[in-house]
Image (cartoon, rainbow, N blue to C red; front, side, top):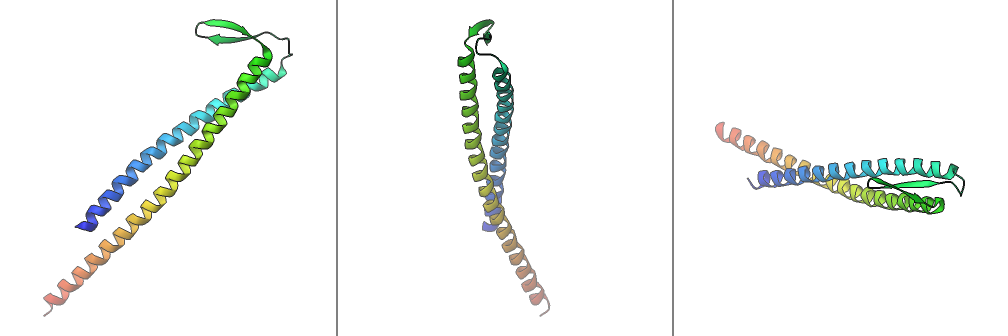
Length: 130
Protein backbone atom coordinates (compact mmCIF):
# COMPACT_ATOMS: atom_id res chain seq x y z
CA UNK A 1 0.00 0.00 0.00
CA UNK A 2 2.96 2.32 0.45
CA UNK A 3 3.35 2.54 -3.32
CA UNK A 4 -0.30 3.45 -3.78
CA UNK A 5 0.01 6.19 -1.18
CA UNK A 6 3.16 7.52 -2.85
CA UNK A 7 1.36 7.48 -6.20
CA UNK A 8 -1.57 9.41 -4.72
CA UNK A 9 0.78 11.96 -3.16
CA UNK A 10 2.65 12.43 -6.44
CA UNK A 11 -0.63 12.84 -8.35
CA UNK A 12 -1.83 15.45 -5.85
CA UNK A 13 1.47 17.32 -6.20
CA UNK A 14 1.15 17.14 -9.99
CA UNK A 15 -2.39 18.53 -9.94
CA UNK A 16 -1.31 21.40 -7.66
CA UNK A 17 1.61 22.11 -9.97
CA UNK A 18 -0.71 22.18 -12.99
CA UNK A 19 -2.87 24.78 -11.23
CA UNK A 20 0.22 26.92 -10.60
CA UNK A 21 1.23 26.58 -14.26
CA UNK A 22 -2.25 27.71 -15.30
CA UNK A 23 -2.02 30.80 -13.08
CA UNK A 24 1.43 31.65 -14.48
CA UNK A 25 0.24 31.16 -18.05
CA UNK A 26 -2.66 33.54 -17.39
CA UNK A 27 -0.23 36.10 -15.96
CA UNK A 28 1.98 35.75 -19.03
CA UNK A 29 -1.02 36.30 -21.28
CA UNK A 30 -2.03 39.41 -19.32
CA UNK A 31 1.48 40.86 -19.58
CA UNK A 32 1.58 40.10 -23.32
CA UNK A 33 -1.70 41.96 -23.75
CA UNK A 34 -0.42 44.94 -21.75
CA UNK A 35 2.81 44.93 -23.75
CA UNK A 36 0.85 44.99 -27.00
CA UNK A 37 -1.33 47.88 -25.81
CA UNK A 38 1.65 49.90 -24.60
CA UNK A 39 3.56 49.23 -27.82
CA UNK A 40 0.65 50.66 -29.79
CA UNK A 41 0.61 53.74 -27.54
CA UNK A 42 4.36 54.14 -28.05
CA UNK A 43 3.95 53.94 -31.82
CA UNK A 44 1.29 56.64 -31.71
CA UNK A 45 3.41 58.86 -29.46
CA UNK A 46 6.39 58.44 -31.79
CA UNK A 47 4.29 59.92 -34.60
CA UNK A 48 3.59 63.10 -32.63
CA UNK A 49 5.62 66.28 -32.79
CA UNK A 50 7.42 67.30 -29.60
CA UNK A 51 5.07 70.25 -29.08
CA UNK A 52 1.88 68.19 -29.56
CA UNK A 53 -0.71 68.16 -26.79
CA UNK A 54 -0.99 64.88 -24.94
CA UNK A 55 -3.54 64.13 -22.26
CA UNK A 56 -3.49 61.41 -19.64
CA UNK A 57 -6.64 59.98 -18.10
CA UNK A 58 -6.37 60.03 -14.30
CA UNK A 59 -9.60 58.78 -12.82
CA UNK A 60 -12.42 60.78 -14.44
CA UNK A 61 -10.11 63.70 -15.37
CA UNK A 62 -7.92 64.32 -18.43
CA UNK A 63 -4.64 65.97 -17.43
CA UNK A 64 -2.28 67.63 -19.88
CA UNK A 65 1.07 65.89 -20.05
CA UNK A 66 4.33 66.81 -21.74
CA UNK A 67 4.95 64.68 -24.85
CA UNK A 68 8.47 63.71 -23.78
CA UNK A 69 7.17 62.77 -20.33
CA UNK A 70 4.45 60.62 -21.87
CA UNK A 71 7.01 58.88 -24.11
CA UNK A 72 9.27 58.29 -21.12
CA UNK A 73 6.42 56.87 -19.03
CA UNK A 74 5.37 54.48 -21.79
CA UNK A 75 8.98 53.35 -22.32
CA UNK A 76 9.37 52.69 -18.58
CA UNK A 77 6.09 50.80 -18.55
CA UNK A 78 7.20 48.65 -21.49
CA UNK A 79 10.49 47.90 -19.73
CA UNK A 80 8.63 46.95 -16.53
CA UNK A 81 6.25 44.68 -18.45
CA UNK A 82 9.17 43.01 -20.24
CA UNK A 83 10.94 42.35 -16.93
CA UNK A 84 7.77 40.91 -15.40
CA UNK A 85 7.24 38.68 -18.44
CA UNK A 86 10.78 37.35 -18.08
CA UNK A 87 10.17 36.58 -14.39
CA UNK A 88 6.95 34.74 -15.23
CA UNK A 89 8.69 32.81 -18.04
CA UNK A 90 11.44 31.67 -15.64
CA UNK A 91 8.87 30.58 -13.05
CA UNK A 92 6.85 28.81 -15.73
CA UNK A 93 9.92 26.96 -17.01
CA UNK A 94 10.85 25.90 -13.47
CA UNK A 95 7.33 24.59 -12.86
CA UNK A 96 7.34 22.71 -16.17
CA UNK A 97 10.70 21.13 -15.29
CA UNK A 98 9.28 20.13 -11.92
CA UNK A 99 6.23 18.64 -13.65
CA UNK A 100 8.48 16.48 -15.83
CA UNK A 101 10.21 15.10 -12.72
CA UNK A 102 6.88 14.36 -11.04
CA UNK A 103 5.57 12.60 -14.17
CA UNK A 104 8.73 10.46 -14.20
CA UNK A 105 8.22 9.61 -10.52
CA UNK A 106 4.59 8.66 -11.19
CA UNK A 107 5.59 6.45 -14.11
CA UNK A 108 8.25 4.71 -12.00
CA UNK A 109 5.78 4.10 -9.18
CA UNK A 110 3.18 2.73 -11.60
CA UNK A 111 5.75 0.39 -13.15
CA UNK A 112 6.74 -0.85 -9.70
CA UNK A 113 3.08 -1.39 -8.80
CA UNK A 114 2.53 -3.39 -12.03
CA UNK A 115 5.66 -5.43 -11.35
CA UNK A 116 4.50 -6.18 -7.82
CA UNK A 117 1.03 -7.13 -9.09
CA UNK A 118 2.53 -9.45 -11.73
CA UNK A 119 4.81 -11.09 -9.16
CA UNK A 120 1.87 -11.54 -6.82
CA UNK A 121 -0.25 -13.09 -9.56
CA UNK A 122 2.63 -15.38 -10.58
CA UNK A 123 3.14 -16.52 -7.00
CA UNK A 124 -0.59 -17.17 -6.58
CA UNK A 125 -0.70 -19.18 -9.81
CA UNK A 126 2.33 -21.23 -8.78
CA UNK A 127 0.79 -21.98 -5.41
CA UNK A 128 -2.55 -22.92 -6.99
CA UNK A 129 -0.87 -25.43 -9.33
CA UNK A 130 0.70 -27.36 -6.43
